[in-house]
Image (cartoon, rainbow, N blue to C red; front, side, top):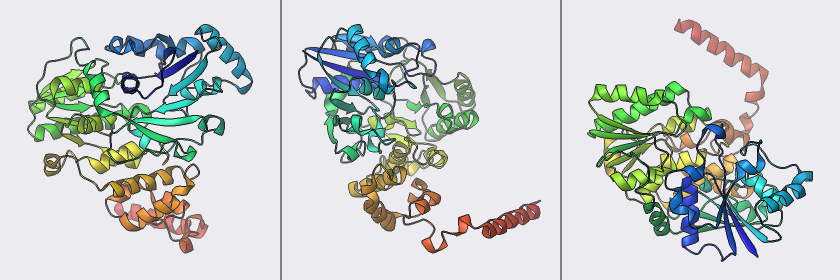
Length: 444
């Protein structure tokens, strides 16, 4: 007997798996189990995936649905992995709990380098792995150095073609081949969800603003994120959009919407707030937005690449500057959105639509950023990074890099090697501090 176990944490990811199954991306199996996980900070107060509107439409692709949270309770799925000595016990326990017996198991997981996917992969030590990507992070490097006992078992990476022509960097250090989930199959699955979500507003051709709750990630303060939403609203109002829909992040505080509602009243804009936990793609299908605006959400690229909708970005340059450490896994998604989409504050660029960037130049940018993020994971990308920086580092592309990072890696754009002693020279540091003190005193 062969059992396939599919780990999913979001409805978007489940839809990706459904599209892959519909397209024949997986071999036949005697049994298919969907293993759902709730990675929210407080799972007890957050509805699980299998309670989401529209989940029942996708449920039929799987024979059984089981909960990872219940299986490892009281541990949190985002933090827990089994101790090495406990792995045989955990595998025996799960095989009994899920009725696996002696079945051959194959796994399909997302984000294999971190729990909960890493924990599942470690427990089923002999299971071949398929990694599927439900967003833009697949275009970036693997977040951490993955143990060979896990990485060498990954047979392929399934991903959506959100940036046509661009190959993902994820897991390339193990020679993993990327495989595209057909866009037509994915949009067909999403069409099954179009009429889900009770109480969704009936608004025609609005501007849709995408909330991401960046303050929860420590990237922006709550006040800065409120200001970002207001700038989005002001920007679409300036472009002449009288109807605006704000799609909140499921865990964002209510204060975000109150500030927006006050600003909408001042601008004379008809604002509708959508708090229902449905994918943004449901709104795209039902409302056919005149414009979709966000910071670096994957939904911006699905709106553009899969639905042909006009899109614009806001706040992405600030985000790129704030992301810490440099290897933050959000950096490549933010870089792609910034490089490809028009800035909301530039009406001419928004009217011109998505930027047509040379595929080789874009791939070079991603390789350079990817190497700067994870030089120990992808050392073979150094020549490509050096070539890109020599040819393309200019006033605009500097936002994707940090001089300190380039210097530490000895890359073009960093401090020349002969001056590299300066940051570590105590005399030089004293001179700089003295100069800053004098400048501040003159300013007073």
